[in-house]
Image (cartoon, rainbow, N blue to C red):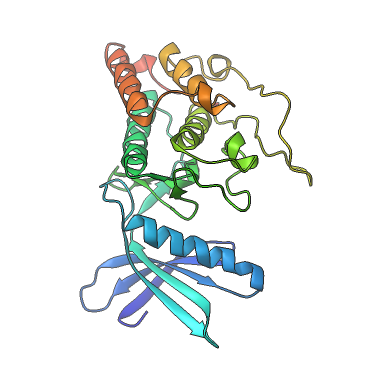
Length: 277
């Protein structure tokens, strides 16, 4: 974008690159997501950026990455490229730097639950909560990022969207999505963070997409004996395959995590270190 200077490449994905850029006049840093359409099917990536921009402007939470503006570049009247200017957040995702302290994990996920509750209260679900979308800044600040898969409550997607290790069964079945979808994604992410392993995916790594008949996972207590039973039960409630069997709401999850924090605060510090998984 005019008025900005590229500093460095931050990451890349399907048809997209994210750059750290600096505003020439103010010196302030931003993150610029650039998506280039090369094939007709690439339009879905353009749509995801449009979605992130539209839904971000309906939300206002200090731990949700802010989106500033969107630029569409057209060729022969059709969008050929899209650029999204976002808040720059330095740091690492918990996918790349998994926290080891259980109190810190609870603190992180309490913040994530607060962001998701904010979104859900406004009729929006994130639909792609995962460790790679939870960023811990260099100053320790927690940010939830990437609203490319977000949608209104009740949406039925026209294709399967989600990340295999964290996707909810109803996302695979292309059923209406609601706040319980966020609960499942949240619980799957918390399970991975506590254990270093993923839950059995509802989306098998095969050419045919079908639900697994069994939903079996390794007990958290075996993988990480230091996790309190109340936190184990919370995770199990979140990742129930049937949405109706999941816990009530993000507000309830926040409350339960608060009780876990009180329990952990009564323990000695050396009793709360997470295992290597």
